[in-house]
Length: 182
Image 1 (spheres, rainbow, N blue to C red):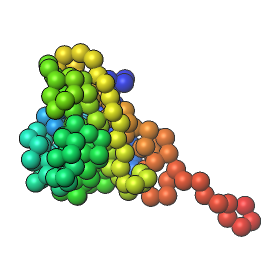
Image 2 (image 1 turned 135 degrees about the horizontal axis):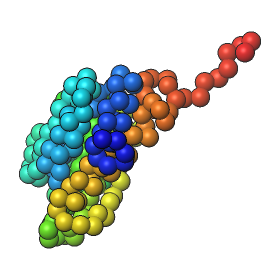
Image 3 (image 1 turned 60 degrees about the horizontal axis):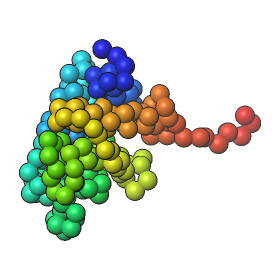
């Protein structure tokens, strides 16, 4: 399957990571392993997917992924900085080049002071300013829809950073000064 759904995006992400010679790891809360499963559904994913951590319980975000306990106390798990720290933790724990993270409220009702559909996704990689970035999403729909859209969204965030669009192996995609005599 191709296209901009989760499966098509996963195919494109895996191909881009293979081309770049990069690896990826996931840290998941509300998606409960769906992100990593979507990636490993792609034939050849074993070349680039290091693994995933499902840290559904808040305390596991701190003890396994290294999310700052103070941040969790201040904001709870539904937070962009928490998502970034989760992505960094996945990179570190699983020794990957890129970390992806998902956290939020899948529903059906509110949690941690947020309505269902409030989601943060994050990417961690050396090439990003500050080493990570996050995006807040407000996703309509039922619990399965929120989880699927979260997977689609984080893959869509990563895709433009891969080789076909300018990121990739060290030095690729950067403007180079012309050499003398060019």
